[in-house]
Length: 117
Length: 107
Image (tube, each protein chain N blue to C red):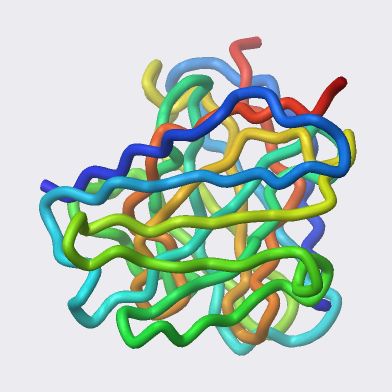
């Protein structure tokens, strides 16, 4: 059974960097799937942030490309995302998910990150 | 970016009803469409992919159809567990984009 669990700071200061980790169990991040991050905001709904493959290859949403970076730790079977220069508009529920052919077939429960001073 | 638009935004229904949610893309997505069910505090659940292919374990009362720019999700006989928010997502091209959601609520 594939399970994903997001973790990270719940509060980030404006202009700071948001960093989250997703622990994956029941599947290896070194397999054939891509791994993605999605966020949910009241204003913009669900927004795909980007994806990462075990080779380190990434694809980012152009709307966030200048501020986002994804990485993975194969030894811990974890993926991570960081978003710099955050503003209140980055306040959201952040999800990690396993991608299968472009669809997200397993999701974490999400972690709420608030950007505020 | 491909814009996805769902209608209605809110749907009030009763157990046993047949309900349909529509998703329209700003350009053809050639059937590369997924549907998700989301309940508060829970992980979103993939229901369907390639517009009409049911994900393993999803009840057969869920069905999908469509092509080009317009797609529908139908629940044939609404069950109590089906009250949730439903999202469509296109994966025809980057960046992947979602509809704004349809909240299915108890009438």
